[in-house]
Image (cartoon, rainbow, N blue to C red; front, side, top):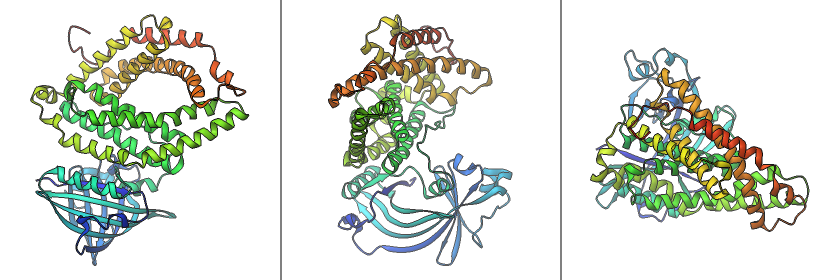
Length: 481
């Protein structure tokens, strides 16, 4: 059986809240270790989803190469990586392996317990220490749970129980990746990374990778929101949630109408909870100096307090765990009614999905200038779904002959999104001010009027016409497109 591991990060400073849990009964096995992490200057290992460290424990040095889905370990004589001819490290990096450099040093203490829960056998480890590089340091407080035998549901049940007792959040980065991040300036936000899709992949695996990519983007920005109250990070956290919700919509024929409904509702709730702070960010940027700006700034701070409370809530923290469990082990993977779609080649499904959303945007955007605000807002959401679907499936259409077609299509789609977004900001501003009781303050009128809608409507209509006339870059999936 393949081992399944979940890593949780502690938001607090002590694991004391976990000490009464039955999983921590008995005397733990104690180990102290020093880990030296390595990568190339260009981050080749990180880009490959791999990690390399020398683990020093009890006078021994072991070289650990972490690969997607497996680890390789072998003893080495000292604190520097050994490049064995024909070995896995040279096979992965080639001549680039000679460019390896130190990216971080971790000093860690581990307390480990064997756990028998239901029909499962697990290992629980609490890891505490520091990770440093030059003059930068970060505290490490991780909870690692590994399933060695039995049903995976028991692993997530234990993880959920511990997360209820202490402020634990799903970790989407390893200690090695955190070391790599120490070598770079602290970002204000993290944009979406391309999911690692290949043309040979099934639809089920493509959805899993896309959803995990969205979750990773959210968690990285969530940490930045909590640490920095960064406007950019909040925006990207909401982008990640929209992308994830859009993935559920794009893959709805594969997932079925009923499966994952609690997850979808949870994601919708979380996106709504972050929305008010984002609306206030937009208004604070536009408001002139004076009483209105002062009130909006105060409301923004209160909204960020609410965001911090929501992100720290049990519901938000468990949502990520539930999603990871469902993606790998949910009932959608065993539904006989959708088996043929799950096993379909990803490029074929991508063509069908892109054509479906393209048709909807083309149809619903006709006579765009005359559309009511509500319908224009729905068109904006449909355009976002088309954009996200195109981004999701981009790795499947990388042939040189398609690149120019794809660029023309994406440029036209981006122009439509920009115009519809500007119109949405004009429509949303008065609603936010009215909800806060600020419409009567000096300067509110300028925000409500916000600018001339006519040129924005004209630009949106022209962008829609340009998109409607742009040829698809994906293969024709059927006679309807």
